[in-house]
Length: 156
Image (tube, rainbow, N blue to C red):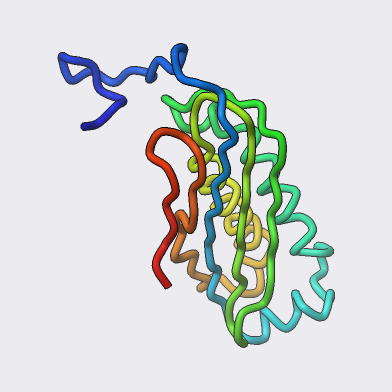
């Protein structure tokens, strides 16, 4: 059942008034594939715009906090923690992992996915002058804890 549709099939925000406040957490990831020399420039701290990972981390955190302004039917949430980790993966990719937490009446999957996505877009924005062929891929939910639907974790 699609919870964002009413009985007439119209989009609406889900009413969470009666839901219990519980601890909720979600983890999402994204990858940015790039030329090996682009990744090396980032890792070596030689990018002319500055620390790419630091800027992308802040962008991801800000994005998580603004998710309800970007995704029309998301509830505004009081996040208690947002962590965005970026790391070189192999010779041609950056892996981004975003974790969001709160005590609330609805989950934080969209906040984690938004954080990972915007961090990836920020890497693209900062590096597009040297590598227009970068590819943002594998944006996905890795794990979700709390709420009525329980624990979800991607199988290895």
